[in-house]
Length: 419
Image (cartoon, rainbow, N blue to C red; front, side, top):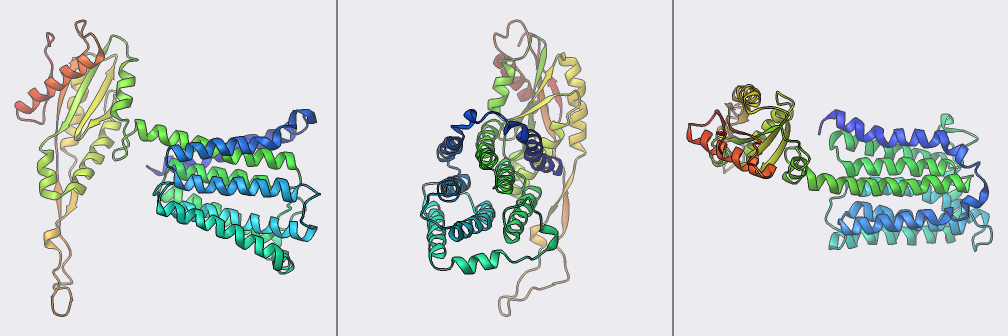
């Protein structure tokens, strides 16, 4: 994924936030009876999100949602209500600890590896949540005054604002966590990281509106809704997109083919001697070839839609194009790919180690790099009346690809009209 997609993943939740902030004051002026069920909304959203995270085995979101649910219960039942077992000082302590620890948990779970909900790793992460709850409970009981004194300390005058009801230490925790999540999205872009970032933005807005329970509840519920969206969107992406190349998958191709009209041409594209590339240079280089090829297919002349069919085979869909028109574009693409040589390291030229002193021999010598070029064969088939379904056209294009291989590879072959 490129920087443009990273910015998209960061900006989407931010833009949604701005829109909601613009209308939140108007929403809260609606008559009170509409909000009688508002306190239940976060529970409904979080239970739904927890179910989805469990079904799709998304460990990070599952742990975050457990924390969000527990914290919402604590805020609504122990802080917002006046007739609880906590005094004013203990409520302040609980608020301070929640607003400080919650954003750091977003960072912690964002950095953990995904190993499933029901696993030893998942059990350890649940243990982390339980330990935090125990620690907070003990601090409320025995060290509340000391905690309050620490959190009431002013660190930066710029953070002073009458309308903010959380301490500076908590604001710093939120801003640090948002910065870390943003950097993770830029360096390792993913829908799930974007969902965690967006969710934390809404949690931050919720606590910035801590003096208004209705606004707090709405923003807090939206944090769970953001996670639901990211879980669903991520699952869709996994099902319909190829992870290695970033192209749409075979499943997406099948759905798209069913939506086509009568005029289109399909192209089957195959990397020449791909097995030899893997055997000679290794599967990492083979994967690099597929990614490079996918980049060219994504920008193929003729506005073709590209899909990974499987292995080293790809499919191009030329909608509203005849086979002859598609062949011209396919030949342009083939020539571009033929010239696309890239550097690979020659591992055999790496400096060797001396077995006695474990030092490298010829330390000044650098691993040599050599150029690797590759080519593709392309088979084309135009949709004909005797093709009962688009998959018949696809089979015909596959036969044309076989003919291209037989003719010596690195060429374009159009299927005969009778095929």
